[in-house]
Length: 252
Image (tube, rainbow, N blue to C red; front, side):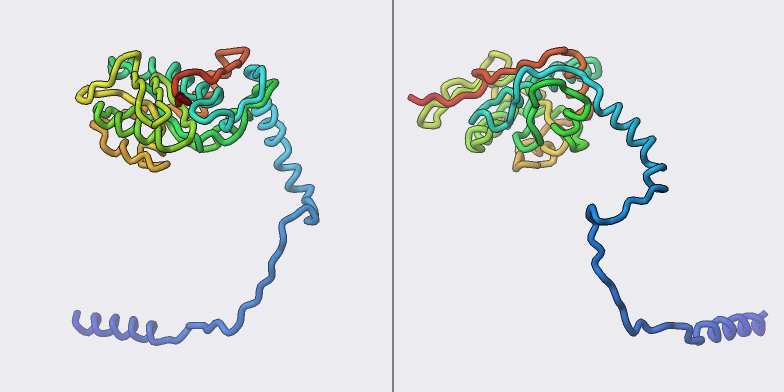
């Protein structure tokens, strides 16, 4: 037995001692620009075209009609397109949340930077939703105390961006003091637990929204923001969103 073990060890040692390594002595390379000058492969085109035609047909399906062009840069504190997106999240995700928990969403907060294109005048297609929201962000509901909501309010006041909100009324005086803060038409109770719908990127602290990390609990709805928009567009044959008084700053 010992003799056989020694033989095995010797064979392994012999194999390992064989120098089969190769040394790299030179490398060569060149940049190949990918542009319109590259000849199109007909074989590749023949494979891709059926899928492309089917995808184009799906993406160009008309879901609704927009009466005007809407941009996230249309206003300082709230915009028509931001209001549409926040209201859509509120309207379509609250029934899901209530069905699972028996509770209602109190407000919605999204981010200005998450709106990636305009809502163009004319036919609104599936492609429009993908342009508005190309990311895979999903809706989550975060339970936070009123004291943390007040941190959120301070963030909104100081951000100088029209972050989309729904369910919240915020009026700021010219000197940056608060004239009115309401959720669901009521003053904020610092001890009350509020259920805020947002997206998973912001929940993790995206756009410096660190206050979400102080939440009491998290509810994942498995509902992508893009799918919310697709469903919302399918529900309404005409889109005519408005900027309103939900978040304003007084001049005097």
